Length: 70
Image (tube, rainbow, N blue to C red):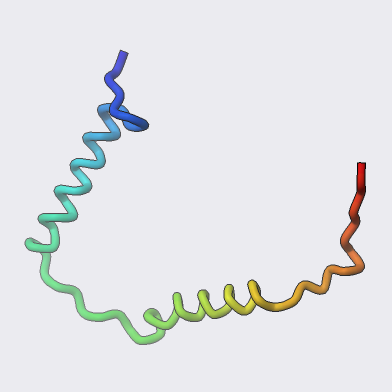
């Protein structure tokens, strides 16, 4: 039976170790990328603003709510 380290097996642990090593050394090897355009930077901000608006806007489902007591 395969050895298990907590919730990860040996294969998963090796995969996580390889990802960690690649994240440590690839930025030292690869050239720096130019900054993205302004619209791509504002895209996540727009999504967050829309989610905040939807979270705090009042729900108008008063007529559609059905409550059953047992």
